[in-house]
Image: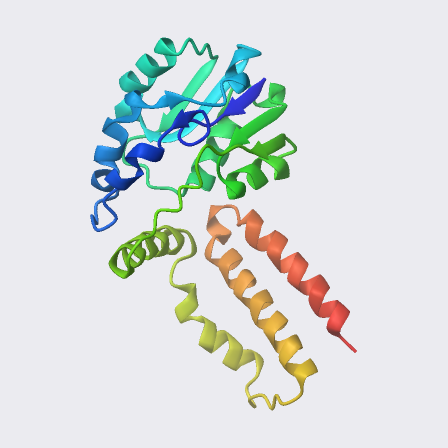
Amino acid sequence: MIIVDLDNCISDDGWRIHLIDFSEQDFDKRHEKYHEKCHQDALRNAHLVRETDDILIFTSRPEKYRRLTEEWLAMNKIYYKQLVMRPQGNHDSSVALKEEMLVTSPYFTRIVQAFDDRKDIVEMYINAGIDAAVVQINDNDYQMGVPEILMVAAQTFKERNAQYGDNYKKFGSIMRSLFPDGLNISSEDEWNRIGLFVQLVSKTTRYAANMDKGGHEDSAHDACVYAAMLQEMTK
């Protein structure tokens, strides 16, 4: 059983990318015109969906556009077991969203392969033990201006802050308690070690912010990596 993405993987959205309004603060409205035209896309990479009907479609398109999506799939004779879309009101990152789709899928144990146009999502699948590959139709290198970049950055901040809380505001007090007499850093080796140490503390505080939620696996993993790197640099 395989997972296939839609936009820019088998559904050619290149012609409607310009319809995304990056200046719009509302996440749903920002992509509204872009999604409303999804049923007009051309089918690409058809071989991914022609060789089997054991297909799971995981897409970041909102549930609101299910009818248009199902019509497009039927028109292109794409037969599938499951079509999973972004729940209304969900603004999680695409990586977090598709990871949730993966682990909650009733077909989870039968999935052997996945295709997506985003490298970070493919890496998530690989980390879950699934053979995955990046499949793109277009580079989609739409150039955002400064206001658009800041709007997207603000959305990223909201997502991360909801997960980690304001731990970045507590970082100073933690470092001060660890080094009450201050630090005298001068050599290149010392700067290397303090850089790794700061990353280790940062990941630890992120884990602490999620302690009552069962912890945070990525932070635990990253802390392990930085600790190993720090050990390598320790004299």
